Length: 316
Image 1: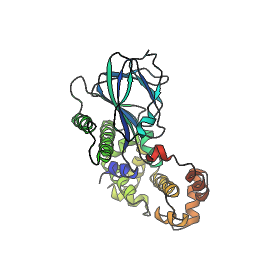
Image 2: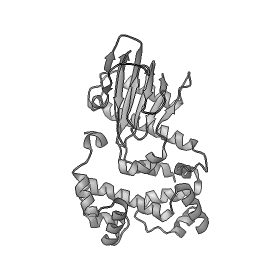
Image 3: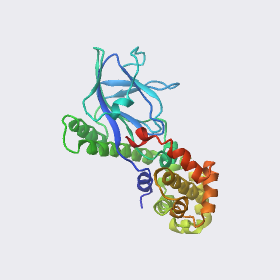
Image 4: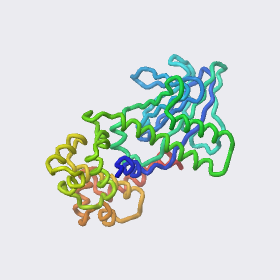
């Protein structure tokens, strides 16, 4: 069983919103997609990614840069560029695939930039465990095969309008982001204190997969330990050390995230949602939800349904 697949499935990836840009220096883009991973791929030339209080980061041809939490940043022709920043996000909502341009007359650069669309609440544990920025380098010759093929495919696909083009591009963007996440998880060393290391631990990964596959099941520590092929005490200690919380606390918090998604996006009653996430008693569910979110489910639903970030999180 593949726990990372269950976690990614739970995030409900819904494609990427992206644009490709063509610039000559001086130029400057700014972008922020709070809670949603955004990325830049350099397909020609070089650029500099700038974040407040962080050193400049050089992006060269073939490099992929991902900001998992969508933190505010600028991408420009050089760190000291005086070009006026232009917000890149509005251009990602356009249906046309024509390149967006900034022409200053100097050195040329081309980028493919975008952001993912997924359930921010369900993604929160994964995003919080990732670094602020992830870089996959071409290393001066060829990037990893998955990135090289992805860039080649994207460049070819955006050259001419074809049927189902947007759907295909969305899925390719998802795959590239997932490959980047997979590479990072594989690089996390055991005992690092990062809960992503648990995904590389066969026993813990098995338990996590069962939790994410059957969140409504009445899990107990002995049963999870049995699935992990460990003694109860060994499993409980190992789980808490790797993930920073006891197994049943993790189960409860995962259930509450699932409930929050249903409360925001579905018309189901609170009683029905409580059953779906493993509670026989609506009162017990409401107490657990209030402990996690500070509000009763019905009140939380009223507040969050009226403030849903449709354009950013779902790509209206």
